Structures are given as C-alpha cells and as structure tokens.
Length: 400
Ligand code: CTP
Image (cartoon, protein in one colour):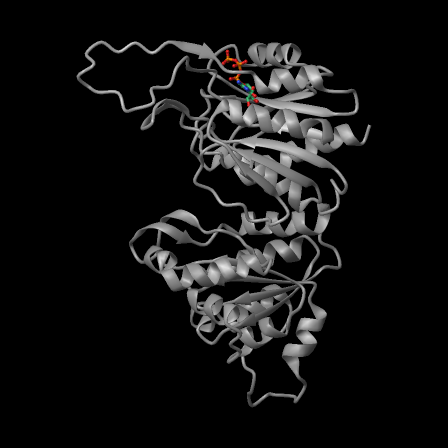
C-alpha cells in the first residue's frame, strides 16, 4: 500500500507520543520506510529502544551530540523523506514552525523540509483554544500544511474537550489517501451540498434541522484531496474548509441552495447532494418579530423546490448524480424509491436505527444502493472514512 514511501515522523513532547508507536507500526506494515525525528521532551514519553525497534532506524533527536558524525543530518533526512508527519504536534512545535524557529532537531528539520507536511495536534483543550495557538494553526493551514484535527473527548489532564490527538488509524488513513489516490478525480468537477437549510419565519426564528454538515464537508475534502475541482454549497454550519482548492458558497435557505445548484450543475461531471434541505418553508415571512402576545399562531407552509429531483431532470447521460436518504423504517425500499424517482445513479442510505449514524455525530453507517440494483453495506466508521467509501463508489462510475 505504501511500498517505497519514505515517511519522516516527527514526535514532540506530549502523552500522545505513545500512540505514535502504533502509527510507526501501521506505516511499516503498509511497506513504508520510517525515520523518526523527536524533540528532547518526546524522549521522556517514549524510549529510544521502542522507536528504533519499531522503525528499524536510528532516531534523530539531537542537532549536536557526542555521536555526531558531522553530517548535516537535518538536511540529508529532509531530502530523503517524501512527507513529514508530526504526531503528536504540541502547541510548542506548531508555534515554532509557524514562526520559523529552529532550535532543536525537529524544528530544524521542519524548516529544512520543502514537501508536504501533516500535523496532528495534541494538547489540553484550553491550550487548543488559545488565541496565539489558533493564529499559528490558521497560518499553517494557509501555507498548505495539512492539519489532522484533534478529536474531542477525555484528555489525559482530566479535562474533556477538543485536543486529543486523532487516533493512529485515522492519521494513517489520511496519509494513505494522500499517497494512493490524489489524482483519482483529476479534471472532474463535482458539486456537493451540505448542512441544513434555515427557512425564516420572522427575522429571529426559522424552521431548520440538526444537520451538522460534517458528512458533506468530509466528502468535499476527500474529493478535493483526490484531485477533484469541488464546488461546495453549504447551508448554515459551523465548519471550516481545510483544502483551499474547494470553492465554497454559503447559503441560508433552500431557494438559495437551489439557485446555486441549478446554475452550477450544467458544468459539473457529478453532484452528490448531502444537504438536509427543509422540504417546506413558511408561505410568508413576517418582516418584523412576531409577538408572543399573538396568542394563536398559525404558520402556513408551502413546499420548497426539490434540488436533487430538479438536477435529476436536468442531468445528461455523462453526468453522475447521487443523493442521501435518511430513513427510519423500510429503509432500503424507501431509498430505492428515491433513487428511481429522482433519477439518481446511486443513493447513500443512513438508517436512524443505527447507533452512531445520522446527524451531528463524527461517525456514520451507510448502505449504498445503485441504479444497477447493487447494494453495498458498510461498517460504522468515521465520517472521514465514509467519505472515502462514497468517493470510491463515485469513481466506479467514471471508470465505465
Ligand atoms: N433534497 C434536495 N432538496 C430538497 C429535499 C431533499 O436536494 N428539497 C435531497 C437531499 O439533499 C438528499 C435527498 O434529497 O440527498 C433525500 O432527501 P429526503 O428529504 O430524504 O427526500 P424526500 O424526497 O424529501 O423524502 P422524505 O419523504 O423521506 O422526506
């Protein structure tokens, strides 16, 4: 899978350093060569013997030392590596890298490295939220450093929040897809919709839903990473786009989303509509805030345009169109009906009966049904991995 790939693994001083030992194993098992560059603090958390036994290479942790053989190791190492993965990346190493500081083996190697860098931050949630750290992180993203966002959860310091290093398996997935598939969708233009829509009742109230947009954003990132030109039309969500090649349009309601999609679709090779579009909207929007003294409230609802069905009518044979179906009962039957009715090539089914699937979660469990009557079921996975499965399915249509 990663045969012949040369990976520089930077380890900085955080408790998550022990998890990087698993990452070395995953890289090695996949056939990559691994060389570790570590900070002095990292060596308090993991031992030299562990790193060297797993990587089968010497660890580089001192710019000067008794065993210095007078080669400029930070230069030869960085010439050698195809990519640099820093996991865990502490606030300190991120701060140094963002500000061009080179005062130890890892920071010196990073500054000498001119290829793709990945960083998996790990720290206490208060440190993660700190303004200076956030500024450094934003700057690295601007510089195309790929940040593998930390997860939320229980932290070693006893806090709960965002800051726990992403699991080694997830980091491995990101690296694997970087190497193996980054030209899969080269030259393909793909439209993605994501998130909910808000239909205004008055200036302060709306009809909406719990969609977080995470699935659509993960798919947009995955397709962009694999070479597609992605247009992302997003409803009101609290998410940022990592890949700067993604063109994002933010909309609020279904009509705005519809207008964008109708305009963009004729120029697209494919569209995957993941948005949870409100099926109805109030017939009239009150121009001023409705008063609670209006004792009897009646809101008349009228249907919104069905974006997916409209694209299905518009679609020409070379275009691929896919949608999502969130069902609670008779799942496959309902999904198949939607696939036929909306003229889709495939549909991604979520069942609310499955724990960990659906709105707001970081995981999803999907079944894909296609227009050739094929059905593929998948395990519960992270939305990032699910995005990989959906992209793989889309790819099969382009190969025909
Ligand atoms: N969709 C859309 N525009 C709408 C409603 C839905 O583009 N106005 C898309 C969604 O993005 C999703 C798919 O259609 O890809 C399925 O949405 P869903 O609301 O489940 O379909 P409906 O046909 O509205 O069926 P239901 O009766 O289950 O609500």
